[in-house]
Image (cartoon, rainbow, N blue to C red; front, side, top):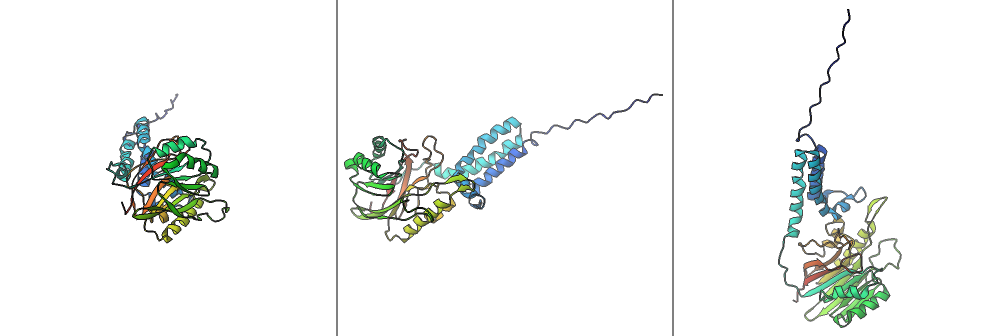
Length: 325
């Protein structure tokens, strides 16, 4: 008698439903939302991760369109629903900056620009800056030879000027009390000279103006390398804190976004507008705002980017309401 072998028929695995697919995508949306609303709690222990997150914080909003696209490809209702979390978080964090407001009155116009030491179009750059009708222009990364060219280009519009190292100021109003401010990080050569203080003299009052260029940040073996910049920002903050002038303006390339908690020693002393979303670097496709005009004892009512020049940064123009306006 022949006995036929019986084989078990494999049972098909039930297909996942739209609410079961895309769990990793949903988790990614949750992480993006948490980073947006709790970025100040991200520690800097691992390669300055906190500074990195805060520097590129607005770009976490990309989690929304990318999440929607991935969810549609995965056919995941769970992932699509989860995308609402970073969307709500981004609106919560950035809507106040994007809300249009009428600028408050201001009586001092300051233009700040990192002109780049490789920028050969001095005349074209000066034309862009003068088009903003500035009372004061501050430049960083300007060589001694280029400074003379800018002085000629600004001409009678900005007849008063001072330079120190690779920074300078040109003004409609008289300048006095020029002094170098040492913001060199420890171990940096003495030839590194990037901060200047002058006093802008006007009828009715005077404002101390600091023009500063903080060290660049880098991605290296240690992660997001910000130590030199942070040390320089601390030195600048100490100089401002000790300044007896009631009105202080700080303009320059700070190589940092103001949301970075590492800049708190400085931003606790001088402030920027709470509205506006001006990105300045790199000029070809700006992703961060690292060029700033800040103030103490005065109010920076508006900051906006100007047209592209021959530099890798966009210039910014700031309107400042001073106490004697």
